[in-house]
Length: 245
Image 1 (spheres, rainbow, N blue to C red):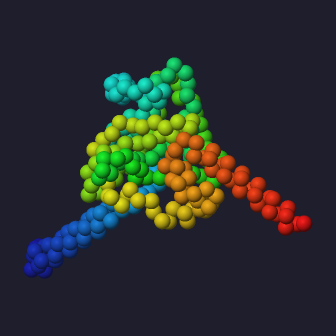
Image 2: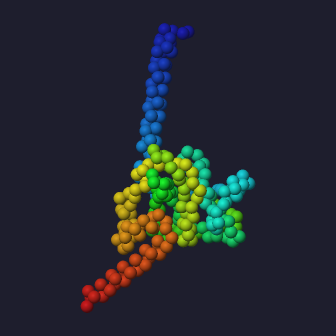
Image 3: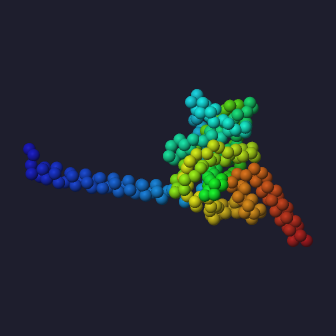
């Protein structure tokens, strides 16, 4: 039997609960949106691409890659936007021999670059080398072989061109470019970068310019630092010998 109490509950309490739940859901969505907006990058970050170990090349992918393989380099780097948050980056071996592809903890030595307001290509990411020797790996990429990795898409208020830079076997390769959005502050090297002990040592042994070469994946930069480090250690050894006399 439907009572007055049931009517009150159905017409008053239930709608109130629904409104309260709806308000709660809207509040959560607003909060999540706020987090998403706040998560937009405001400074230069390290690249954290990740090799797709499950990637299997398909005829469709190969057709797309072959259509863009217009460089004379032994490695062709091709990017496409997989979705609003990820780029797909393909490494294509154009040679008739297997190539060694180096990685660090399953990350390719890769950073993003963008054109600044003057139209010059500048890095918007930097590379952070691992101190652990076990982090460094390599694998063979067969002739006409494909390797895929993924890297994040940035958001910002400056529309520009985006490309990727790969360092492999002390050689640099650049990808095609796509339209993207960044913030101007991403062109600036963060002051906190030298809080990383290894990079502080590089700057002390060499210079800030040498540090830039290393974090921006320039060829021969690591070799240059090794020479600086050896010279520093030799100097310290000579000083210790003099102090013992």
